[in-house]
Each structure stands twice: as C-alpha cells, then as structure tokens.
Picture 1 (cartoon, one colour):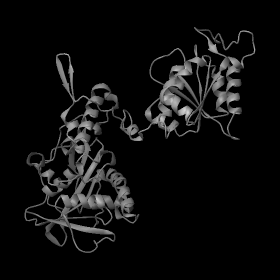
Picture 2 (cartoon, rainbow, N blue to C red):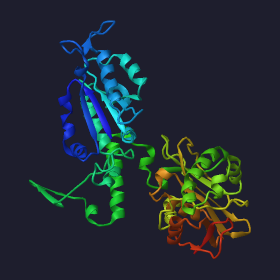
Picture 3 (tube, rainbow, N blue to C red):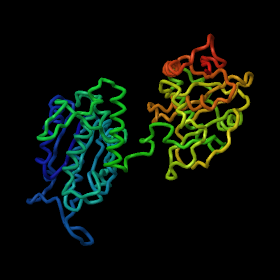
Picture 4 (cartoon, rainbow, N blue to C red):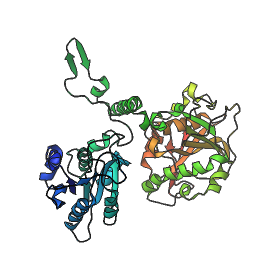
Length: 450
C-alpha cells in the first residue's frame, strides 16, 4: 500500500517509522511519503492561511497551496489513471471505526490532508473530488489542533490489517471491535502474582486446558466488559446464551416474512455443505412458508424487548430442563421436507408476547401424516450471528419436549453432506435410517422415545 500525507508539520509524522509500521515500511509492505504543504507556496513567508470571509475567529487554510499539493500527489501516480483515496481528518466527518479501517485496508493508495487552524477552504474539497474519491473522517466527538494525530491513528489502524504486517494474523480477529464487542482480559506468567500483601491469581479456567470452557469464559468476559464500558456497542443479541433469554410464541402468518428471511439465511451454508442449490427451503416463497404454518406447529423465538419476561410459552421446558435433551450444538437447520399433514396438538394458556424483537430462531414439529406415533421435527434454524451458543441444541430439546403423549419415535431429516448437523444429531441420540430421504440428497434420522 502507498500512503501520501500532506501537512505543514512533516516531523509530526516521524513516528510512522517506528514499531510495526516502521518494520512494514522497511519490508516494502508500506510506501509512506510525507509532503510539506509549504513547498507549494510562492511567497516569501510561505503562507498557507488567511482570514475567513464573513468574519469569525481563527484562520482558514488557503486553496491554492492545497490544490497544488494534491495535484502533485496525483501526478506521481505509480500507474496511468491511478488516483488515491483522499482522507481528510476532521470533527465533521464520518466516524472512524474498525469496519472503516478494514475497508480502507483494501485500497492500494491512500492520501491524507492534514488540516490546521479553522480548517481547509471548502473549495479544496470540490477541487479534490473532481480528481479522486474524498472522505472526511472523524476520530471522535472532540477537536484536535490538526489532522496529524488522526493520521497517525488511522494509518496504524489500517496498516496493521495489511497481510504480513502482523505476525499472528489470528490475533486480528480476536481484538476489540472486530465483532462489536470489546476484547476479553488477558493474562501471562506468573499464574500467581504476589502484589505486596495481595496474591492475584489468573482465572483457573485459563489454566484448565479446556478450550471450549476457555472460549465460553472469554465470550462472557467480552460481553460483561462491553456492557460496563461501552453499552452503546452492545446489541441485544450479544447477551443471548440460551432460549431463556428469548421470547417464544407460536408462529402466525404475521411472522412468515421474517421466517422466510431467516430460512434463506440459514440454508445458504447447507447449500454449500451439500454442493447443491436444489434444497427446497431455498426455493420456497412467502406463500409456501405461510401455508406451512397451518400444517406444522412452528415456534418463533425473538430477542426480548423492553417488556422483558412478558410471555414465555408454558410448556414447562425451562423448569424441567428438557430443552437440554441434545448433547451438541445444532447450529444449522436440517434440510427438511415440506410435506403436508396435520399439525401437533394445540396447547393452551399462552401468555401475550411482545413481537417487536428480532426473530432469531425457529423450529417446527408435527405428528407424521401417516403415523401419529412419530413426531417430526423440522426447520430448526438459528440466525447466523447467534450460532455456536447452544441455541440449536436447545431448540431440538424444545421440539422434543412438545411431543404429544403416545409418541414413540422422533424424526428429522438433513442433507447427506451436512456433516456438522449429522454429528450433532448423532450425539443427541438420533441414528441415520438406511437409504436416501424423501427429498433427493437428504437422509432421515430417528430416535426412540424412552
């Protein structure tokens, strides 16, 4: 990546020769060029500012030196037709975020214009926009003396994302803001530190060697830290760890549009796993999804809104723990068939549920049309951003617990190539039946009710 910086204080940018950025420059990963704006003035005093039209405090940077400096940068293009993406730091710009840093890291050439005083003459933006993309970027809701500090921050945030700059690329995806949460606490040797009269120990889970437990602990710490320090970043879904954190209701036609959206989001990965776009859930339309609500009993789970606790369906799953029937996390839904048939027996006593929250999970079930002792479970789906938290396993247990009296067999289906689903279902006690399922490319699994 090439980076050009125009400033009236070139020495301010000397830290870009230090640490990782300096190493990247010496390795040829970064080509950083700093230009003195005053080199493009033509008076004895090398003037770059003047008083503002209309009056007011302070001085404004003149357009002529800036136009000349930016034109000179463009003229030094490494290839014909190439232009940089110009970034102008300023408190009136778009917020600088990790997502923006990742976007800028894909650019081959960035240029920065470091303003001073009361800012740069507005006509400079018009001049530059006719020649290159221009984005005004703000570090935050405060004012600095100039753009140089912001450039140092932006360049480091962007450059460290370039391949080869960071030795351990995996560390980039575990950092604060990569997925909207702050980073978890970190520890190193010694495991027990005698701090004067206090002994400070590393949390035992980090010494356990149990990688699943460590991952769960770290996620919990990230959520706690984000809630305490940056609650503005914390989406409601970030705290979801089980069905008890969601509101549940029997689906109605009003839920069908969101069900269709969730269904397509979940079955993309199934299409990839099975190398086929012929999976029925990917081709169903809104009318089909709506019609199936009449032949299957479908439950929808929503992120709890402000009316938390209102209306959890009274099947007794939370109290009995039957939702934990499965032993593995079924993150992806099975590619179930959509045969017509009668729905499961209705259960009364439902409390009113606030349907305003986002629909993030669903499962459906019914008695098999040709065998009332078989309880068919289908369309088990969890929103992609909530997968990996045990919700799939809990959904399976929820549907199993809803089986009517007299049920002898639990049944479901999934893609023959859905190895992750198959492994999870086997751990939950299901076994694959011989032969292909009713839908080409699928297998059927059953589990006896004990």
